[in-house]
Image (tube, rainbow, N blue to C red):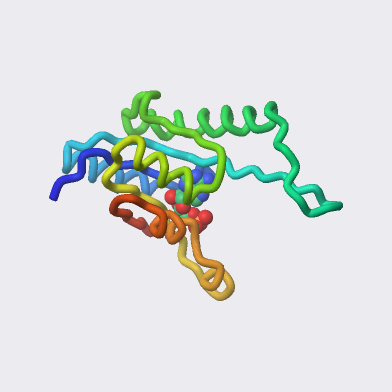
Length: 143
Ligand code: AMP
């Protein structure tokens, strides 16, 4: 079975060396398109009422711009054009699944951290993506 469009879900805070290497190798092997996605999760909570407050548009835009800048750095290493860089605002699970459907992605690649103790019980973003994904998901060990 071939993959035609591979989406790397990226958290720029991670060491993404292994994720990028695997994405590049898979795209080459399958002659697939390669896209990059990051989701800005920004949900400011009012400490008094513990309810969500509307996000100031300027703050949100700043976070999106910053994420896009970081993704461009990764994209350069992968020869990915701007058209294949996606920055969304929302929850990772939902936005990545939606993007995969919209862009006809057939493989999502996520990173996976070694987890211990409480981390195991809380689960991971990768697991959440896997549950919502409309296609195959590959979890790459980030170490
Ligand atoms: P985590 O479970 O949060 O340690 O994240 C594991 C992997 O989930 C990362 O290596 C990324 O592939 C993906 N991921 C986490 N946060 C984001 C995000 N904000 N946007 C896109 N992908 C993410």
